[in-house]
Image 1 (cartoon, helix red, strand yellow):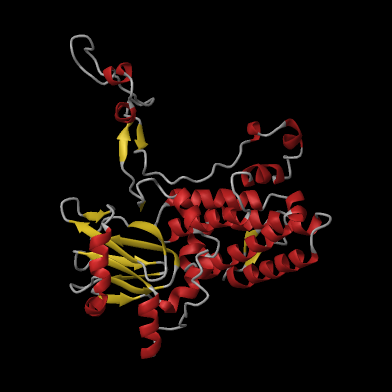
Image 2: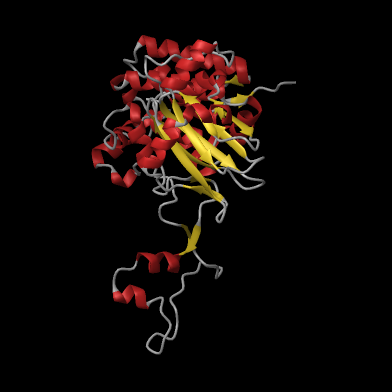
Length: 378
């Protein structure tokens, strides 16, 4: 999980006593950023800064999954996830030629030199922002190192400006046969090069392999058996069960929900928001699974509660107001909980309290006969 080791102390503010600071420095992980440009944005988890010339990285990082991100000037954010171990030293170098962070692995000998010199580097390392750690933990409690590695692009980079290539370039780079290579070769035997274009004659662009997020696809209707499709008109439980076969633990689905939300909120990737919506819609469209997977849905309510609670209100209200996605989807969920036989009373009560919280905070009305609407603030 994104949680830290039980033996690792977590301050609740940045007012840290000297003895505790020493303990955090010795037990926590360290991230070293070499040659990072001054005035660039650097962020970890729920907080970001504009760095000065003396910035060399971050210290006292709690063990667990964290999201590191950065940007220079008006360039889009680029980030990466890392599952930090206690006392780990992670080194990343800024490549001035490409104006980006090199993702190449630093050899152990160099890392050992940095580890032995951590005390001298201490003045140049910023402390982890413990004042926002609770918010980060709430947003990442189901994310594990192996799950994050499975979902991240092969390149390791999380960016809204993924590298695009034409379809013919993709074919050429993936070519292993002489026929495929010849399709992109111009000579006497092949006077024209193979081109792929859309209906308007524009090149067909693809995300370069290794740069796309690897979300699990939600099963389509045609992928289900006849018996599964029979009950799918009003109940998405069969789809959910089929999707859960892709995970070793049902909580990993919630980890993917959190991963998608973080990639959208901190990584600014709209594709992640769309995947988050698909997962929320799936979970909110179930009947039978409310009974058979009660713990999953209680954890889902808690996950969604913190995502709404921790997200900046003006930011989230703006994206939610488009087509009233959440009000309509959650109205369906609350109705399913109320009308499905055999739903655990504890789950019903949690759903009732969550609905009350949403109505109070966002002024959403789930009770109208013609469907949920946003209540006017006037």
